[in-house]
Length: 292
Length: 262
Image (cartoon, rainbow over all chains, first blue to last red; front, side, top):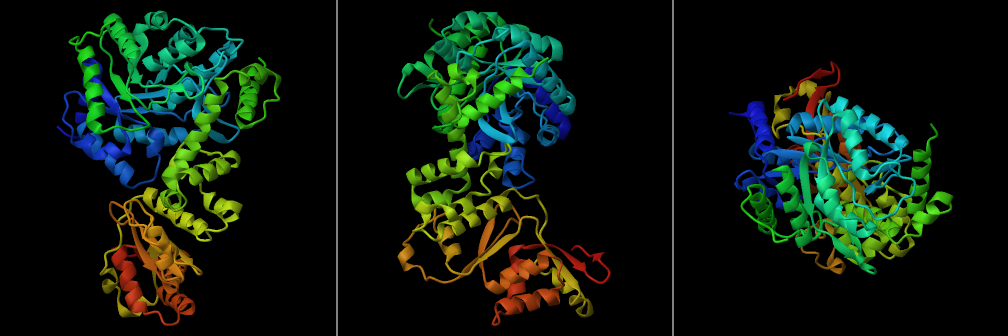
């Protein structure tokens, strides 16, 4: 089996029998390609592969030949009060066609505004107007890509006044109206619950199970001056015990879903990440209990 | 429906800069969490510049680089989320950056790094084989036009050994001692005929030759341009060197514009 047929089978495999994957960073290309861990898949930011040619695309081809792939965008700026950037969509569609990812995801956030890109995931007031705009932008994106995408819950650092919806209502409505899926980032929930003072368990319990296409796990850090009062979603440390506990609680309720270990900074060895990923793999298979 | 979302984003974007004058930003910018967004935006820009200009960073040290990059990023936000493209104005910024004045080679080293990035992400294309010109008959040779490879980038630096400084400050290279470098003019050719970017030193004649080829000059005219720039240049050896490096992708015959791709 080769080429498209094999890719389609792999895509179904991750969705039918969800396993754990790893965020892939350039220093780990060689080990990632060679790794034969059962069910291992990789996720990349498509923005890093929006190039005309060269070794980046060649590496991703090599990885993709052996592992299922997920594209996790950070630059679509779906929550900006503006249409999605046409050129960005064209480039993303090109990557989707070439690499046939089993999942394409983005964020409930904005980053492009006034012609400039701010490398962050910026917040919005969840108003009816914002919902209309995000619905339209997700629809436009799904039509352009000719596939369903998943939207990730953001990390929060600010109390924003004038929300019309709570976040879960907003995401539920978005899914209902666009047919999109959700990516539940458990660390984002933990960080946001800490920073804004809500109950992370209650949020996890209320998140709509049927829409969850993927789960993210990552590490965070405490603000250098405010300490634990302000946690930062920094992706530069291992998943913390409290997030593992929330994750186990989630999987017990909703069943197995493709789960990603994200690490973008202070990159440890590939084997260290693989060990963290194995823990998620065990929880998905129901073989590892996490102490409450 | 009024566009309050757009107004929010205008105000938020301004506040990420330093302008917190919008009334709706007062309660947000006053919260300790607001600085997280400002820091993350700045870190994203600085990290991208660090990834795109590693030799400059090695020359000036991490701390100096981060400070300069932050200065740059304040006035030059990325225009696209593909950050490998970010920072094309950084070399010009360094050239005018007062604290960099005592390192007169820094901006040109940055220019080489930018060319390297362009070569690294250029479209894939097969390079012309080293022996490709052998198939062109003698009477058509003068009309031949060599089209540079999509990834080929070159530059001549008239005052300083920029290629040497850049090369010994690449990752994994021995930075050596700038004091021991022969202080002479140098040019560079960067090209990616296969998997990775190859770099070689190119003289003034070679750079002039590539310039001429890039605008579609015939081989004979490109040769004249090379001799004008560097009278003692050995044209046969230069052409052989460029072909071996994979600097060209196509031979065209100027009179007929016939595509005789090898």
